[in-house]
Image 1 (tube, rainbow, N blue to C red):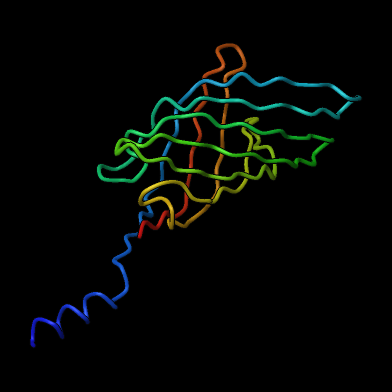
Image 2: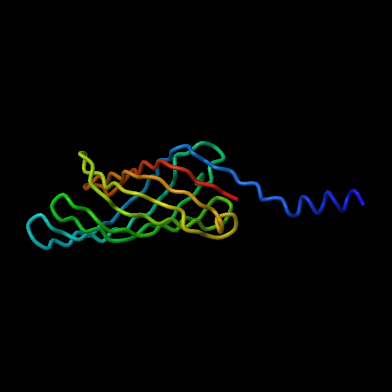
Length: 154
């Protein structure tokens, strides 16, 4: 009887969730396509491929890679747009992130917000978000995306 009571308590207890708050730097290559509209106004189709993330050991993005894509409109100092990223993780699961561009840094980096929007396996009910600053070398297409915020894995 004692076993049944313990089993019942364990089965109705909330699942253990772990939050990762350390920052990350995503490294990859982009192939952005600017479409000039008028002086000081352009739309840019963005496409990048993450090769790796510099993260603390055990971070859920450790060993992850995959594409990000979207579109950004730049009109003077106003920046808008967004897109998605689909990462293959080291554990064989998919992690989906959404991003929203909100500005340009003094160094030319695209800045904005990101959020976890789902995935497979443990990413199905993952949550989190934060900010990003992605700087691309226009000569090589190589980028470094500095990411801050939290990811909670259930």
